[in-house]
Length: 160
Image 1 (cartoon, rainbow, N blue to C red):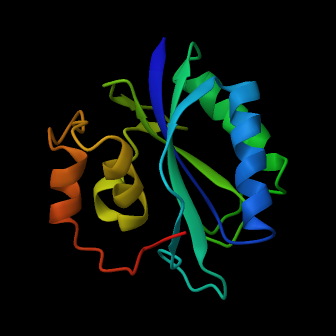
Image 2 (image 1 turned 60 degrees about the vertical axis):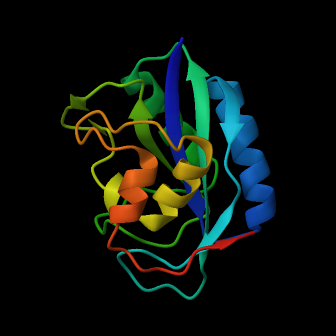
């Protein structure tokens, strides 16, 4: 069984309903959600938007490969109207990122694990440190807490 950390977030629609629905879809398509952080309200990262995001980190146990997970994530995101566009960051009902897959490193044309921006984003590090404070980044060999302490992002993060 593989342990996968997922970051989920969105800033459009009924966020409360969307978060409940996405967890049900993740359990249906990927595997068992064994831990979930609190949900945090955060400003957009990398672009301007009218509405703040809600973000959460989940730990999922799965038998799927990273590519199978990614394919299923795209299917789940499409349930929320997600279309992959040329611009990298935009408002959306739901976005799902693979943060870690076990202690593995993977780089392909479609997928990089661990997620390359973990250490730069408070909206990932705060919930990650909540549920996995001692987990070490496979490349940096820093714990979630250490990365949080070193993060230069100064966004205001509020627990929902």
